[in-house]
Image 1 (cartoon, rainbow, N blue to C red):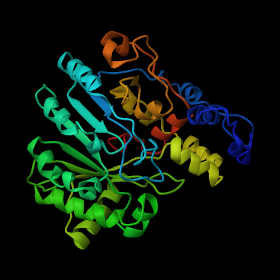
Image 2 (cartoon, rainbow, N blue to C red; image 1 turned 120 degrees about the horizontal axis):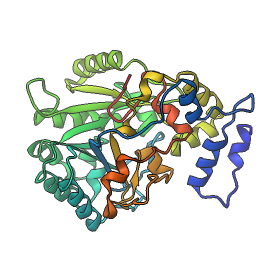
Image 3 (cartoon, rainbow, N blue to C red; image 1 turned 60 degrees about the horizontal axis):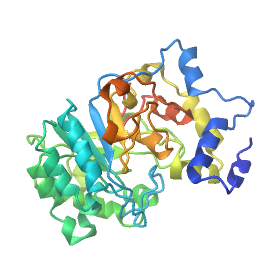
Length: 351
């Protein structure tokens, strides 16, 4: 299969089916595709299996005030999918009956869910130790009703993890839209004002760096130093940590790779950068992803490909801890992104 032919996928297939077909077949010059499973086996590594479940990553909906070029969720203002109150209640019930200590709220812009604040307040009534919100920052300025979110986050000790593609305006706006950088800086200053990212504060503010093109992120520690220096000197902005995350070849980013005819080269980059030491700690071993509909997935990338967990109990309303503990994790070619270089997870590099 050649790169150009990927642009002419069968129109009768859904977008998810097309992406799965592309990932399954690949386009390597020698005609072969080293599957991720075979790559693990060839390095004498055991199959990837679950460890102790520590994190529930909950996608409360795809609605977002931005349309980012790299978004693996295809989020945007036109997306209306949101989690129902009933599903949120089911999740709360599971949390109360398990020992899960970290809840990771994502979207879209999770803050746009009409019951977002109620959900955070109810989560704080459980034994959960950490609540994370994945914020795009600009949502804090998108509407007056969101302006007090920094105070709300601080009140409930929410750990804020925010996307900021770069510490320069041009690169950030190119990836996320004109004006996003300036709005992001204002939002970071709002968070700093209530104590986030300050050394002596217990309010955690972390940033996420995604490459803007078809290449791997640089060294996480070095980038963190650069980000901290530039943001402090130019805008008096402080934060705790920087997480580098590799763009996985799915959704909008896969569409970009195909349209720009970079898919083959990028897949070679991921495969050639395969790091055996990153395999043991990939996030699917300690994290479970829940879709806005309440279905269970090994990770949020599998969620976007509709690859539900390989057990009979696939929905939160039939949550079965034993089945989940003994399942095999579903793997595909996009998994190379989590094991390339220093490895990648929603908490940054892993190796």
